[in-house]
Amino acid sequence: MTRPTVVPSDAPLGAEIRGVDIAAGIDADTLRIVHDALHRHKVVVLRDQRLTPAMQATFCGRFGRLEPHVLPQYLVPGHADLVRVSNVLDDRGEPIGLIDAGRVWHSDGQFLELPNLYSMLYALEVPRDEHGAPLGATCFASTAHAYASLPESTRRRIDGLLAVNSLAAVYATLQRSNLATRRAPLTDAQKREVEHPLVRTHPSTGEKCLYVSRAATLRIVGWPPSESDALIDELSAWIVRDAFVHTHRWQEGDLLMWDNCGSQHLAIGDYALPQRRLMHRATVGGSRPH
Ligand code: OGA
Ligand code: MN
Image (cartoon, rainbow, N blue to C red; front, side):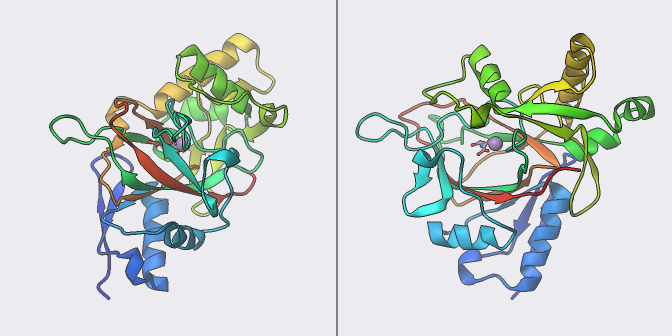
C-alpha cells in the first residue's frame, strides 16, 4: 500500500489526505497517519470515498466510541451511530434529517458534560448552482490558533476561567436569526447548563484551545453580565476572524472529519430544494474538558 500524503490548506487549519481508499481496507499505519493529521490540522478530508453506512460507522469507530445522536428521529435507518444531515423531505413533507445543522459558529456538543470529540460527515448529495458549482460549504476556524495568537495580557486575563454553556442558548441564537426551522421544543434535560473551562487543553495533543462561542456560551462564571457578554463576544469573534477561516467546498464522496476541541465550524445555507443536500454523520464521544 502506498503511504497517504497530507496536503495542508493555506489557512491555520484544514488538510486533504490523498491516497486513502477506506473501502479497500485501512491498516494501522494509515489509521495513525489520518489520526495524527486530524490532530495537527483539526479538519481533514478524504475525497472520493465509496462508503456504505456500515463502512462509515466501522471506520469512524476506529477513532473512538461512537455516539448516538440526541435527536433519534433523524438516524440513518438501522444505524444508531449515524444521523442524517439533510434538507430533503420525506413523502409527508417532513425532514429526513437535521435540516439546519450548524448555521451559527459552534463546536459540536459544547453544551454536553462530555462534548463530542470528533465529527465525521460523509457527503452523498451536494447541492449545486446553475453552473454546477457546489453550494452548502462548511467553514472552519482553529481554536488552538485563536488561543496561541492572543495577546499575552488577554491570556492572563482568561486562563482559569469557567464558562456556562447550554443548548438552550444555541436555540435562542438560531431563533433570533430566524434560522430555527421545524425543531421540536427542548426537553428540560436538553436545556441543562454545563460548566467548562474557557481555555481547554486538548486531551491528546495538550494544545490549549479557546472553548467559547456566542451561540452556546451563556456566561462566564463569577463575572458581571455586561463584562461577561463583552468577553464572550470578543473571544468568539477572535476565533472566527475572516483571514483565518478555512472553507470546505463539498464533493460527493467526501469524508470530512473534524476535531471539536481544536476547531469551530459554520454551515453556509446558500441552497434550497430542489437543490438537495444529504450527508451521513458519525460522532466520536469525548471526555470531560479540562
Ligand atoms: C454538524 C454540522 C455542518 C454542515 O453536522 O455538526 O454542523 O455543513 N454540519 O452540515
Ligand atoms: Mn456542527
